[in-house]
Amino acid sequence: MIYSNYHTHSQYCDGHMEPEDYIKEAIRLGFDSIGFTSHAPLPFYNTYTLKEERVQEYCHEIRYLKEKYRDIIQVYLGKEIDYIPGIMGTDSPKFKSLNLDYTIGSVHLIRNTATGEYIGVDESREEFEKLLDYVFGGDIKKLVSEYYSLIRNMLKEHKPDIIGHLDLLKKNNKEGRYFSENEEWYREEVLKTLTEVENSGAVLEVNTGGISRGYIDTFYPSIWILKECKELGIPIVLNSDAHNPCDLNTYFEPAAKALKDIGYNKQRRLFKGKWVEI
Ligand SMILES: [Zn+2]
Ligand SMILES: [Zn+2]
Image (cartoon, rainbow, N blue to C red; front, side):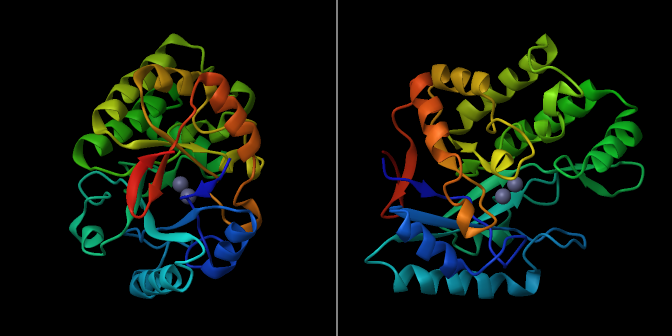
């Protein structure tokens, strides 16, 4: 099986090492393609996204590397773009004007309506509890419902090529600390969201990043969700959300096996700039 990875961060945002280091490692691993997806700048100060003033430099460097390695590996320029209602998403004009090869649409942030600050659902457990207690009065159902409705709205308003880590909010839910994925209300939220995923035509990412960084012991999304996706005919792509070249293919073998067991024999990949089933 020939792999690829379209979810890659580097020193341009919160990853380590230069883009070229990732390309060299991808070639060593026998990948046929690699895509870069620095976190798009956010409308507030933070330490983990690309800085506004480096956006052009980032695009220029990836395009330069695309040309440099064109006979060895396909290199693609993308961005992981947060959805913030009324403020930004993958189809915002400022991102459209960059002529990216593709986008990953992700929801990381929920707004604290009282303070106006944004809190990441994938931040530390302390931050997650702050979000749960201060914004949702300790009601996990309300938090989960808000998270998935943000994803559904993202898919109605924007057209990302890839949907990033669909159930990211489970990162802090190790061993069912806050809820069980078997609970009816949780399954209903997810299934409602999958209908929107299906309608959007976007590719659903199977993301091994949570395992490789030791937060959770399964993929985003969970196996039961992937089984539902298979039933609905939703296309997938396997990514590792690498923040270091050594994580480019982390857990790809077990993920590929799990996907084959579910019945996925193909994934959606970029070939000469077009999405194809491979
Ligand atoms: Zn992400
Ligand atoms: Zn990412």
